[in-house]
Length: 156
Image 1 (cartoon, rainbow, N blue to C red):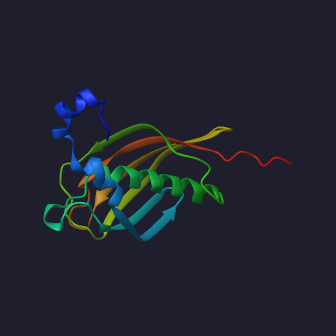
Image 2 (image 1 turned 180 degrees about the horizontal axis):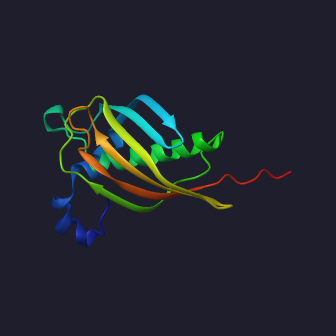
Image 3 (image 1 turned 60 degrees about the horizontal axis):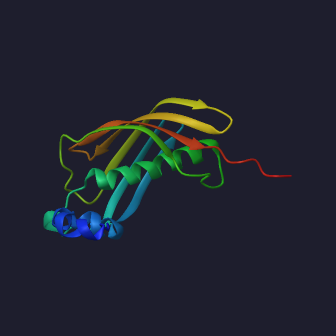
């Protein structure tokens, strides 16, 4: 994160070191994926976190990019596309985080399809999700609405 020179001294002390440099170093491992047209369950390990183990917690900063990736994966799998056609357009996100997730292994993302609508250019989805483990089944929960671009037809 960069500031205009005149803002640097005023606001630099308030910038999160995680946003400044940490999020780029996080690494995740997909332990398992279960897919159906109506549901997706993904188990994730955090292989590396910017935060030291004694300060670590899994936050929405971790969760949201993974949710994006999982909904892209679901759309590609469901529609049997050979590759990702483009980026997800997030239309709405609601997330509640009543409990912290401190574990780094076996974090479960459960996504359940609420609605799907197809147009010639886009697929529109709404999913409910929960994130947690066996003991904290829904440390995070919410809904997201998003659109995925359909692949362009091949020119013949």
